Image (tube, rainbow, N blue to C red; front, side):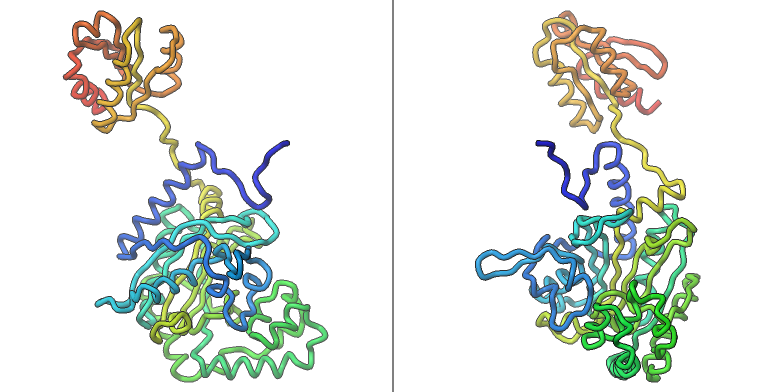
Amino acid sequence: MNYQTPRGTYDILPGETEKWQKTEELIREVCRLYRFREIRTPIFESTAVFKRENDSSDMVNKEMYTFNMGDDSYTLRPEGTAGVIRSFDQHKLYGAAELPARLYYLGPMFRHERPQKGRQRQFTQFGIESIGAKSPEIDAEAIALGIDIVKRMGISSVKVCINTLGDDASRAAYRQALKDYFTPHIDSLCGDCKRRLEQNPLRILDCKVDADNPVLKDAPRLSDYLNEESREYFDRVLAALDGLGIPYEIDDRLVRGLDYYTHTVFEVKSTRPDSGAQATIFAGGRYDHLVEYFGGPQLSGMGFAIGLERLIALAEEEGWTAEESGNADVYIMGAGNVGTAPLTLASTLRAAGYVTDVNLLQRSMKAQFKSADRSGAPVIVIVGEAELQNGTVNVKNKLDNTQQTVAVDMLVNTVKGIIKK
């Protein structure tokens, strides 16, 4: 049988893993600068964590990997926010002296959708959640953190698209207006939008199937239904972005794909002409009722998520690279019957922090030198039977093609002097 990765998944091989490690290190460093701390939640949760009440999102209705164990239903996490909020409530993190709680997550997510470039069934997602306080400036800071990561990855061709969904009262008035408007046109809508009309008519505006439907172009606009408080909140978000020097475009059709958003929603997109349908780099928004839904107090939150596959692909398209870190600092070889001496020397050098490769096979010196060349090590240590008796080793410096004999207890200092040079 020819075993292959399941459709929509892939292996990350040596030579590629370095890109992921560099990206993850960069993300963690930016989070440290913003004082966001990592949280790690289970890869699967009770299905009810993700499938909440009358949710209209495609993720919940079409894409979740759900399985039963006895009478219990579980789902592989399709997104990070719900699990983080569940954990925030379960462990009563809202009792912390300082709110908002600044949290980030990084790990695999799962959605059953058609695999395509930058979109797989198992994918890696980084996200932040700022939970426990409501402020337009917090919204702007979240966007700034994401922009900081994107810039550090060398991605410069981006734009911020932003909108407001308003508070509960504004959104309720707008939902009713959309329902009244779309009801006479229901036969011209796709099957999903017919369902959304009852569940959440705002999601009709985000439909990919009906995107060119003339009915959508004349739909009511949310800006006409915002109350004064919602307008003021959004104006402060925009003022904060202005203060940070982050340009933006207001997109009054932007509603996002999940039902729990309130007030600020945004997408940061690549402006490269070849981005196509995969233009969105990261996206998110504010939510006012998730903490309460999972049993905590009425607290607001703000977050976004980035798919690392897409982030790395876009960065590479703009010339970003990650150096492979596979070369050794030192290669140790044995000449004759020297027993475990090479392995012992390697242990000493590794303890001192040097990347060390060692010959552990019965091979000729010629074969060992070829292996040393492939290792990329600038220092070769040779131990023979005579050297073993004398407590010495031969050290070859490939940087200037010199060789010296040194006492074993001076090996680390000798290597240090060569690597420094």
